[in-house]
Picture 1 (tube, each protein chain N blue to C red):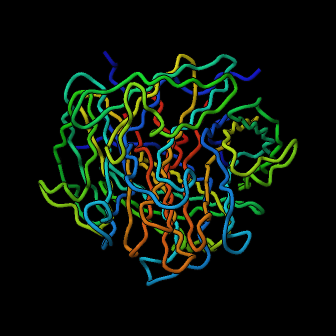
Picture 2 (cartoon, rainbow over the protein chains, first blue to last red; picture 1 turned 90 degrees about the horizontal axis):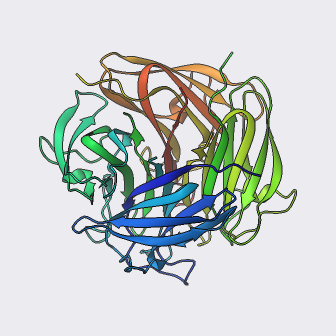
Length: 126
Length: 126
Length: 126
Length: 126
């Protein structure tokens, strides 16, 4: 049995889904991804909150990560309570009842025939 | 009500705004960005200090981030007390009276028709 | 004599080896890499565990890093107990009996004549 | 007066200076960079140690960062006690008598007409 690893709160301040992508979907669209690893033996029911520059935060967005599982979710697939719009700067707070680890990735394909990537571990804020 | 998350001091040692960009502004200019998330219920009045290789640091640059808001600021938009010049290596210290989280991003478009991205969470130094 | 630096458990949630690369091998294939530094005076016999979205974790994968040595391993070179498949999202936990430091890198060459890179320090989870 | 920020020991496990670059020097050569910020009021005389896969570590490499200054150094400019060779995987430990903060950057221009960037904060290992 593997111990639960990580933290219960993670923060990503620098979200911004590129507007406009090129190349075949879904591999070459522009997107941002939150990658969660739950090493524990119980399911993790995360609550995500999105923060914006000019309005109140929106959430919770539910995100379930099974016991001993990863889940890589594209931010633009999060639509309930409302879609996270392209080309709109955001920040994200992820809260989990059990420890998890969170990594952030952006793929930018705005220029046809090119891919740019950037990412970072999210900030653990327990 | 969401707790205040993060730290009061953040450090980015590796700043360097690319000189010369290509493509339509403002999306495809070269830039560096500081992305701040303030989850707390009071406004955060940050003070930024820029460090250089060959002269004394410059600051404070004021940066206000509203309660429960993000702010993504391009470093080359910071002009008071003095503009942060392109193509000049710098480091940045961000101080906040309340906890925030800070992420750093560089977009490099010096070569026409290409975009390169890199970024990292800033270093929390409380 | 140099002290042992780092942590005994490291986590990378956002693994995904790009499927399809371009250019001469091995420099320009797409790959992901785990880079381990062991500053201590005894060999580090790491055990790696890979987590997936839809099945139980697989491991341990043994990885030996000599005393006062680095080891940069491509994830697709890990084949025992089973190969880590291309284009399949994964997370990785690295466990070491002695402190080490772990960095993660992705090289994406899916588009001919281009290279995209992204990386981050792994998350220390002791 | 600004407090000293950061840590006294920093680790970068994943160094590897790209072999072969394209475009005008020095902006478009391939390189790796260590970016150090010393916020304190005394000079920081760092000692760098380079670790390899197949031989004993080499160092110390001296690196002086003035009080309240940054220093961005290209790894291939470090030649004493011996040059850090291109295309050879390495790790780096930076030791400072006073707290500093360290960020790592790679620029890869092996493919003519392209730039790829990746970077991360170094790991603080005090």
